[in-house]
Image: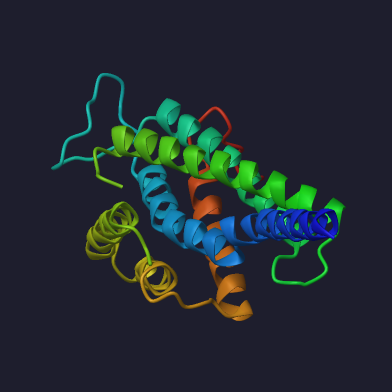
Length: 143
Length: 79
């Protein structure tokens, strides 16, 4: 009798642990997290676009507040960084679609997708932070 | 309950975005407001708002990638 009781407790504990794992996957990254990342990045990208639209600095010319100008090499750095961020957004969105959080009866395969989402999202937010720093250094503005 | 470190981090981001809204004006204001709604007010964007944000990101991206005369990737328009 005691053995049956212990097995039952173990089964409940294991099932709770499994639920907790799935909940963790579901609660870590949501569509709103990605939306926040995108809306937060939009002004940063606008600042980069504005920089690109400045006249190019002439040879030997330095940008000043009075006479702002842009450098093609810097623009290229910004474009390359943005391409990586854009790819990161696409990957995170694909992960969210695959994970489909909020739907009950999540499968093992979907749980794996959620695990990929967490890793990809954290990589994305790190990439956005690096890109912001890069853009800030180039534009001289706090982004 | 949201922990204090998260609140401070979110507040710093909102403050920086607000400064950008002042500097860059109306073109970025909607996204600063959306960010605030999502992060602080815990609202969810509508499908339409999400699509509008995607379109705005693409428009900013197109402007960033637009070459100027004299750039190595500039292609002069055909005469």
